[in-house]
Image (cartoon, rainbow, N blue to C red):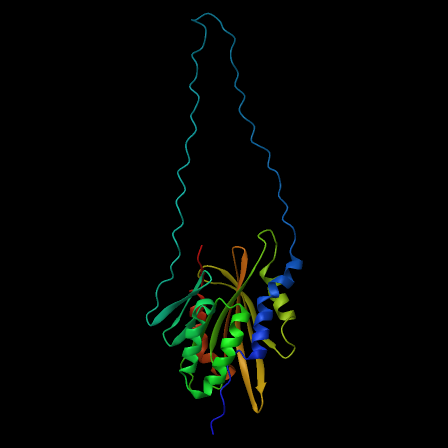
Amino acid sequence: MQKPRYFGMTVVQVGILAGLAALTGIVLCVGAALIIFDRPAAALPEVVIASPTSPSSQPRPTAMPQPTLAPAPTETPEFTPTEIPGWKKFAGSGVELWLPENYAGGDPATDLEAIVGEIRALGADFEEIAAEVEQQLPEAEVSIFAFDKNVGDALTLTTVQITSEPLDSDVALTMDEYLDAVIQNLPSDYRVVERRIEQLDRYEAGRLTVDYKITDEDVSVFRKRLIYAIRAGDAMWVVQFLTERDDFKAHQPTFELSVQTFVVQP
């Protein structure tokens, strides 16, 4: 009898995901108030008017230079990632991300029924997973949720999840401080195997790679989570790619290319 397959975001994982989404609220305490310095106005040139004399001796008035009007600002064109052949765009809550065509999903706020239907279409082994998703996903406040329909021999789904938390614009929060807070709030059995800050196509991102294990009845599966923290505007976005540890190397190029397409629309 085939072992039951377990969703990469079980009830336990949903709680962990929600904790990650709420981390920003925890790390706000490290922010410092923004100090605004008053800049003195530039002194106006002094204009000296000569006393009147005879017309012959009175100097001709010098024409005052007229200010040059600054050119009208041009609007920054909306950023559109280059389309990748064989990939498609996922959108939700003002963000976009591209993934291969074998991924299904969308915005849980509007596409939950379709997401659950796609999981059920994978077969009877995924019925329990679909029920979990239907119940738990809305509570996790996920902007985009997608999964690889090519399951193969894996016992869990390879998923992509995007969450966000608003930040005050005047909070001074470095990416290193945010990553410190994420690591401090991970469960004790999570192992951070990589940490760095890198430049994506459009944003700076903090990157963590984490190993962990999920256990459910007689099934134990080692998983790997690639986490990108991206501050855009007044929000911190967390893009997570999750898969089984043994499959991570095969999925890693897709994950790293996909995050380059992440964009927050104005």
